[in-house]
Image 1 (cartoon, rainbow, N blue to C red):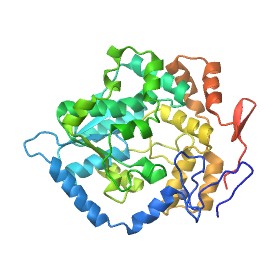
Image 2: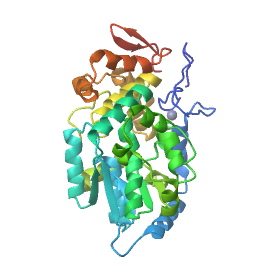
Image 3: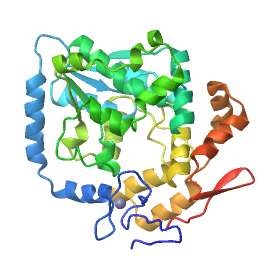
Image 4: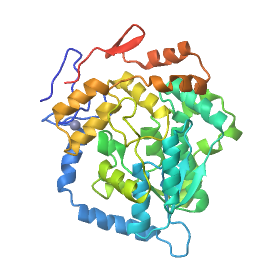
Length: 375
Ligand SMILES: [Zn+2]
């Protein structure tokens, strides 16, 4: 049952998606768009989408040894799953690519090494670390996105690589917007473009962050999108695997574990109860903490909602986990963050304060406490 509290917040009556989520919509039952999609997935004609997939792959397939598709990977479950399927199930010749994150975690690096070692062609892109740091810091301050520079590079540099290698098909894993509740622009149309990328994934802040960072043009090579002419000429199609197949993150995890050497973290990750997602970089925990301060839901909510939608957890269990784990400050990484951004504690806290939603939180003893209870 959907409930309202004094702040007029609501949570999805099926999972725990919150009304504060950008681009969320509820139906008359109080189900969020992610739950509506999960429901639709059960009866969708996946057979016809498989045919669409075959058509798309055949259009790009090359038999002369050149790469025919590009798959961004991190060594995590999703990219590994997509690359595995393209190479082994569909006989494609993928090039895999990683844009190195700013504060890699040992487990993420180990997993990436194991993935490549399991038999893939791979390019590692390492943008100038000082430019990356400045863009990340600017994005942290101006957008409340702790790794905004990296977010730019995983799109701009990947497109640059595709253009330069003459690869016209880029395959991402899940469509977060469709799977987790957001824009529905891509749930009937699998192919999207750079305009959509900038609008949805970079939240319209690309030009602003680049400008305000003051990073000189000659350091921006991996942060610049190819020109319109290059993009038109290269006819690149960007798409998500989750359009073509009933996406299940847990299945991705099992396949990546069995075939690509994926290892899970020991114990739970900061701010949640799961141990098999997003183990590649320390800034991810800050990213989800800021998401919590902005919108009132953090990593535990996100993870628990996924479990509810795939039928692996009931709603009350999810509520209990969220009350227990959501919004934990990633204390174990604090020194690392300060050192990385080259700022002291006060200005760091000032950024958190800037992004904390005053309708959802009040600060007491230096800690932002929620004014709401998940229900
Ligand atoms: Zn929902």
